Length: 521
Image 1: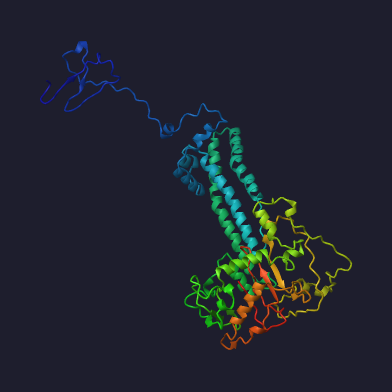
Image 2: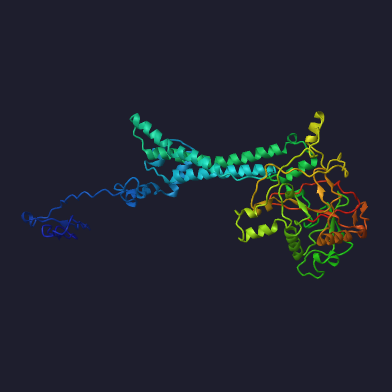
């Protein structure tokens, strides 16, 4: 042996033909030795050089198959351009909004993708469309007009944004080829595609800015001819941008009771006067029997929080939809359409249940034809100096309004712009129905020659409310009206959509200003 504690293991490499490369075991001098025929008996320490190992493939080469043999029109050819991590896409989006350095070398690392440009562009298209839709719908809501959906904005956004992202890079790439440059087409596509990232938040900020500007114009008193203090407060609480502060709103259900309200006891329990207010021993009612409130700053106003039973609420809603719109009662639609005597509800049910197609002409309510004759009294000559005054007619809530019961009350002319539509759409345009004495809206007076019977349920409910507030009062006032003198003779049913609201007003059309006005909300 060569020395102490040293071991030599000899392997004849000529006989070990199965080895592709020499192996070496080293431990305190332990190693493989190569002994040829002419060197037997002689130990050598010379190691043969290891063969050159092939270069390790990169991670992208390992994870991506070869696409060189795929045709250009094949989807498999483009798959590799969508093989990108989320972190890479996020990094490229962030750096596109702060373009510093070489975007191709530092960010793309000469590995462009189509995932980011495609989805960023698609997101920008829908962001522009959605934000434009929201801005216009808010503007329509603020102006209290109906918003008409227009999907052409989506087409416009696609026509503008997609060519900008994918057609412009081709033009730029062709130009660089003409001048002898060698940029990658996909890198240029990434420049344009990732640059669209900034437009996604900008579209949202633009929508919010337009809403704020619209709201500022709405709150500007000089923009309205009727900007009274009441109208200003009304527009403030209906605003959405900025959101109103409801801390000053009066809620009778709030505990403890707000300072503006004073609890009072009704003279009669409504549940004992009319069955539509529920049973006197209803276990589902948690409110105090006979509880009401008076508003300290408005003498004469009595608030009775939700005295109706659930069954009465459902019955009243059903009657308002199916029974009260029938003839002889009239609605706002009667001016423009030939509404059937049975109302719109039967036609609506047939369409909703699939018994009649929405395209069936027999289900359309015909419009009234606009016919004018020489005997029409609709148009009244107005002197030129008074044209501006009559352009803004006085309303019943104006102090100078004087109801004239004996003036001519011609029917309003139908509009030329109303559209024929299915009943399921037309019924959503229903705004009001008059009961009993018909109301003439242009002059804000009643048709005293058109009296029709009031619905029994409405008459009984109104009389019970008037009877329950006999002797009720607040600071400095008491209701002395006797319920036996009360008889319901006229009423208006208001219909609301999601964004509708009843404007506050002063009623000066009543001939009897002593009888209570009952409002059910």
